[in-house]
Length: 80
Image 1: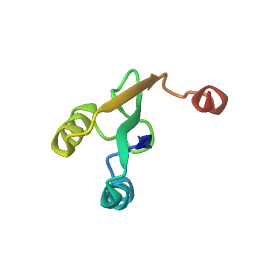
Image 2 (image 1 turned 120 degrees about the vertical axis):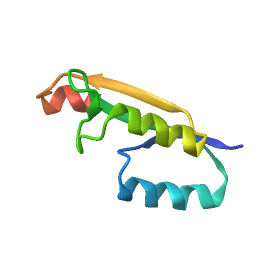
Image 3 (image 1 turned 135 degrees about the horizontal axis):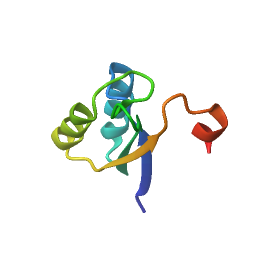
């Protein structure tokens, strides 16, 4: 039975390399997961625009789940 993996996706090179390794096995259903700052619609950690993340997911033919958090989100809220 294939497992479904919720894969943390920042759109950067580290995420891309990790995803590349995961895709080699072809034994997982992968859903990309990205956290965006509500006000700016950018990846929380790197500032990558939402449109670019959507384009990456489309090019990879993978679904994308999004979570929007407030700017200056407290760590406790982010972790929850």
